[in-house]
Amino acid sequence: MSEKEHKVSRRQFLTYTLTGVGGFMAAGMLMPMARFALDPALEAGAESDFVRVASLDELTEEPQRFDFVVEQEDGWYSSEVTRVAWIYLANNEVVALSPVCTHLGCTVNWEGSESYPENFFCPCHGGRFERDGTNIQGTPPTRPLDVYEVQVEGDDVYLGGTVQR
Ligand code: FES
Image (cartoon, rainbow, N blue to C red; front, side, top):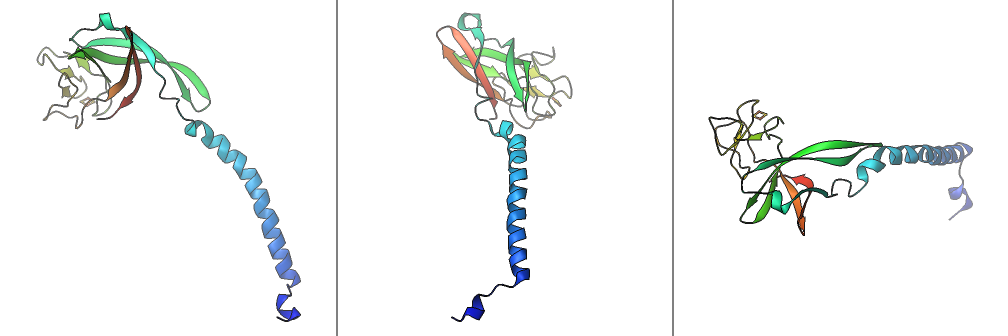
């Protein structure tokens, strides 16, 4: 190869140098901003904390409403939020259902309508669910109620996040 083929013009040298330095400076400015914006969203495990909600001897085969408080991290803001679960025993297993209607998010109540005993009833548009949370065909909700993750330790019942079925 001749020496001429390796020659870089002044214009090319300036272009390469300025592009490299500019890219380096842009990355230096953008990386902290990206990390600042995404870090809380990527933090693992915030939703998987379990909270003691009830003791086993409080539970019956009839769904009962339990209100409980969880610490919620929303970005950089931490607050206490009250959650609700309908909890009952089915074959000695603890079942905890979310009260959030899967149609448009209103709150369902066990036997919330005298016309539909043995159902969860949503007052907003008449949605209904079976005792196990299965949506009843012909009513607005198109999927079952979400279930809470349940842990039982001794006599204590702990609930975690909700899971779609
Ligand atoms: S929000 Fe429950 S039926 Fe519409």
